[in-house]
Image (cartoon, rainbow, N blue to C red; front, top):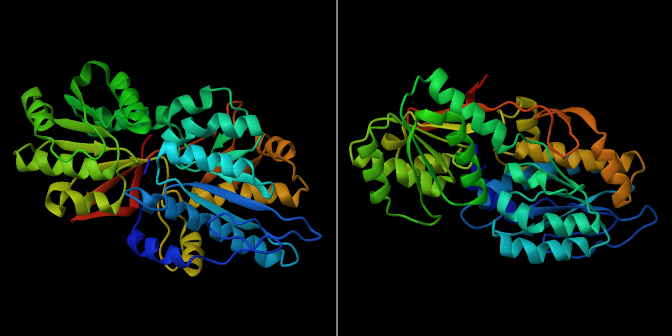
Length: 380
């Protein structure tokens, strides 16, 4: 998983929020909306809004707010609201919040969960309740292999991203000896496993670290001893930034690559501009179109970020269902299964497991001490 400029500003601005109503009032604590003659519908969001990964979740909430602002401006007689639930990316917290969500009759569907671990922890709850969800960002391959008929995602999974990353490393960059590291999370380990399996004999060695770990001297020693000309890290930017920083401090000069969990300007901040220079950070998401970014900035006060456009598209699927008169969970889910449209993040249509049918993976590069979010390379 895991951003574009000004996310820290977004984190501050998002606390003020955008007032959105659902035939009454709704707020971030999930207070029930007052009913009206039109019915009262809310879209829920479940994901991190605070904590280490909070910037990612705020990107998603920002995208949902843009979709709701557009919809509500056209439907002033019966607006749709947002109820957001901050899991901090923690599967345990997400589990209790999932119960709150399914017990709220005003919620027509869920944008989220935002992370793979919380998706795996809550998918059964949502499926048993029949509540449809569309994740803008959870990429673990196994999520859509659980038989949860209400689970969907508008982003390519780790299988697509991992294979593209492997192709980029060996094909585009010509790397011959690659060291693969994962952070033991559902997301990081899942992505790293696909990369490792796809690279085959090009993998010289592997290692596993832990989230919140700060000393990577043992891993650095293994990388240097392996003779690797490249490192691939499956995990998030707090650890990814420290790993590349400590690798550079130890004199390793190879290529560092990671996935969307590290595709965040905070990766550069953590690593330091000099250590981060040249790092490749992939994501199953391209830059937001200029017109979308302008709308996003008008609503949220800052630029859009990673997963903002996917969240906007996910919210619009639910809003299209309401417009089509589909308001029961069963009808909304059927609507999603047959949904076809060109979203701002790309073409949207789902296969029989809930995966998006088409996805492009992009490679972003740290250049001149900054993550260049405007000019990624589409990986073929």
